[in-house]
Image (cartoon, rainbow, N blue to C red; front, side):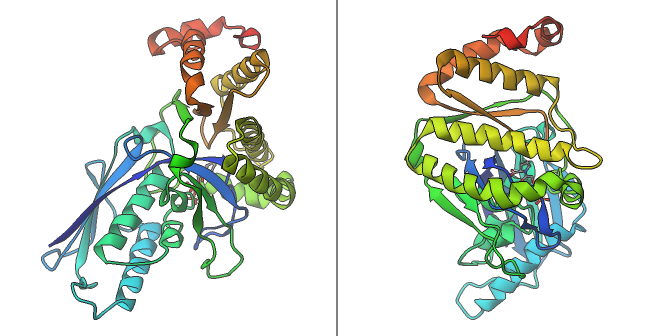
Length: 342
Ligand code: 2P0
């Protein structure tokens, strides 16, 4: 039996991916940029095994066996095996006809709705590439599991290029800077709602498809806003300009949700608590005269916040004051004049 275990973390986009030009190959309509968390934090851990004894391909997610009849999973495995066969004849090669068993576990609640498919597929593809000794870029393979997964293959800040080739060969992820580059940067994730999600099925593919079909605003976003923001935020990351980085991150999150609302019927992901967090952060930044905290929201109500390490204690005390721990929250929130905080 051959066996490999890997860990891959979640990534949080600052310039969002939303909309595909090819549904099967998962080719995006625009470039995107994200930061990958450290491996100790929110991650998927995946073990892949292959053996002549195995009678069929099998997969277990968070301890429960799931169907292997999933086209995205099959596409990733097929592509890994195809690439492995290109390397045949080197010593120690694995027989690609052997069946594979996959066990994957998240160290955070899948139901929290936080990018679990990105970590899940990045981890799966990385582990399979190690098992089958596949070399070279594997981000284009992870992309075929879930678009955002290609960004979790790499650490630090990562740029997923939309590419122009029809076979997707240039729609890959590259590292902008390693995680050591901006060591003071921190991400806070505020979870308000848990939803049932399958980490190997995309949470938002259908919503994304509807946006591509119906949103007028999306056309403006992909032709004007995103190309400019990709360039500006890359410069802000390289020069560690938090003020500019925060502004672009918040604006892109807002435009992404505007595009979701411009979808027909609309995709509504943020809730009242999400909007309360947005107001709180603008009030906080205004009170301090600079952008100390940046919010970004994905396809759900939970807030992902970027800030610098020295500002964490003060901002956390504000959050804990305005949004006290769960048992007190619901009653307390009813009376909060969020506009006047902090
Ligand atoms: C992002 N999201 O850039 C954006 C922002 C959600 C909101 O990438 O269909 O689960 O599997 O390619 O990767 C979520 O999209 O979608 C996503 P598929 P995926 O992080």
